Every structure is written in structure tokens, then in C-alpha cells.
Length: 231
Image 1: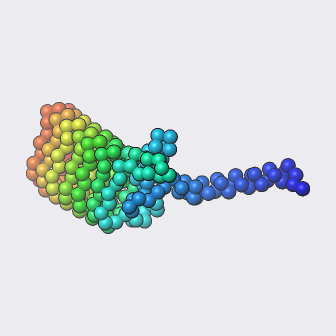
Image 2 (image 1 turned 60 degrees about the vertical axis):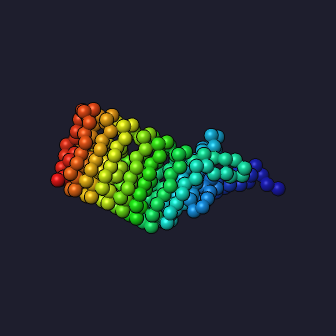
Image 3 (image 1 turned 180 degrees about the horizontal axis):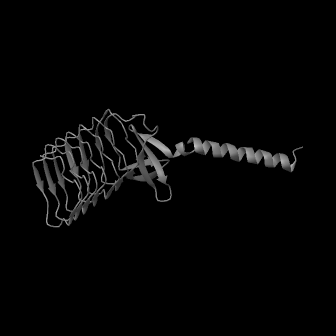
């Protein structure tokens, strides 16, 4: 017959196993679901929200052309996809294109960083927040559309996008942060929206092909070396 001490020992062992599984990611994996080659994390069950995520960080698991769904259904419940997680597509060197739906409101830091073959990106008007370095090192990106919901071009957001030739920053943007477009060596033309008030340090540093920049009168401050090493 088991004593109370025996029962307590079993309970402690069971709890330790649960904690170990949680730390290993085994339990949390049950909130991640794959749909048409894209992984979604049900990060907010109460509000029925999902985010695009990765299954194995740094595995480069996404490749080809990907379409992000605006919602997914799990066990008869519909979850709205409103975020792209930090590092979600990090270093996916064979990702060629991605379609972002209007349900997405935020893109995490380094979300697409190092996607060397990603050739074009269209950020919908629904997106209001993009994390630092989200598209850093997308060296094949030659076409970029920034939606009218974005308010800040974050640090190194498009740094080293060395195939990008022209950029139009919408009127929703109020600040361009440090190094936002640094190292965009093919960038020739930049049109800055009329609500931008600040341009950060080295924002366009080493944009060696830059020949045309339209800076509105709304700009009150320009950081050190913002346009250094530009033609």
C-alpha cells in the first residue's frame, strides 16, 4: 500500500517531467500547426490569434514561394493571423517570395533577415509595426512597397538590401532610424514622406549609387553620417 510520501514523490516526479517537457518545447509544440507549408503558433487562445513562426530556428525550412493565410482553422475554431514572429523566416536562403495578408499588423525583428533570394516584398497597409532588422541582408530584393500603416523605419530594417534601386517612404512614417538603409549599394532614388521628422545616424550610409533624395521640410534632425559614402 502506497504511503502519502510515496504519492507525493510520484507527484513531484510527474511535475518535474512536465517542466522538462515544457523547457524542451514538446508541450508548446502542440500550439504550432502547419498549413500549406507555413507554421502558425496559436499565441493567444483567448482572443483567437495566431502568428507565423518557425518550427526549427535557423533551419532555413521555408523555401520557394509562400503565401501567409489571413486565418487558420483548428478544431473548428478560426484564428486570425495578425503577426509574423521574430526570426520567423530568418536565413531562409531559398525563399523566393512571400505574400503577406491584410490581417497582419506587425512583423517581428529579423523576421526575414538573411533571406538572400527574396526578390520582392509588399508590406500591406494593415502593418503598423516592423521590428529591427526585419529585412536586413535580403540582397536580392529589388522591389519594395511599404504600406501606409508603418510609422517607423526601424534600425537596420533594410540594411544591406543591395539590389534595391528605389524607395518611397509613405506619409505615415515619422522617423527613419539608425542604419535603416545602410549598405543598399544599388539604391539610386529615395522619396521621403512629408511627415518624417528625423533621419537617424548612418541611415543611408554606403548607398554608393544614390543620386536622388527628396527630403521634406518636416525633417528637423539628420543624424551623423546619415548620407556618408554616397555619390
